[in-house]
Length: 216
Image 1 (cartoon, one colour):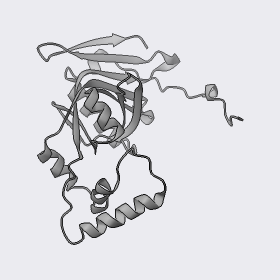
Image 2 (spheres, helix red, strand yellow):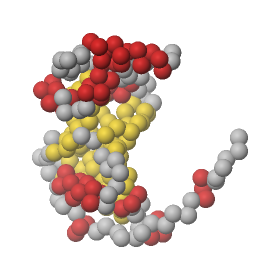
Image 3 (cartoon, rainbow, N blue to C red):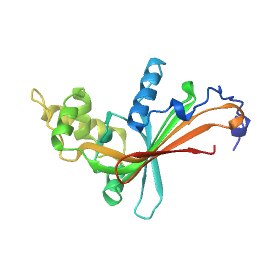
Image 4 (tube, one colour):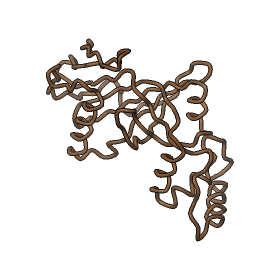
């Protein structure tokens, strides 16, 4: 196989703004909010896109991109089909990790912790805020299952469109939200010569946070 470009030939140089302990909020959720706001103000597209890592029952890692739909002191929220691959993995092992990378700001954030399902009321509120087409596709797609052809999806979508014509689309029983409550959060800021700045927050038994600088 001919590789069009050597992956090791990257010449990206980090901007070297740096990050000091005095720059950090003692609360990692507030620190996340500060960086998330800065990313929005920088005009980054899909600023809420994040990697979600889960594990299979035989401890094999699995990762994909999902969208952050909310966060607060109780954790970070995303939505999906509970019968999907990630849904089944979270059912078997309710621990996961998230990662954000905003190259425009030379920043990444890593988050890990326990995951639990949202209440049906919370999931219903979000579900009905989505475009109708997205609501219908949640019924039409049996996420992660093998599909013979695109026409199968199109036929299912047509079926759901007819089924719910002229009436509200109900929340599917197999669809809803998850909330990851962090026990660790890491803030990474690029710096010169690959001597990046990394700070890890670790939740303590009294729900306070310890902050440690990590070697890059």
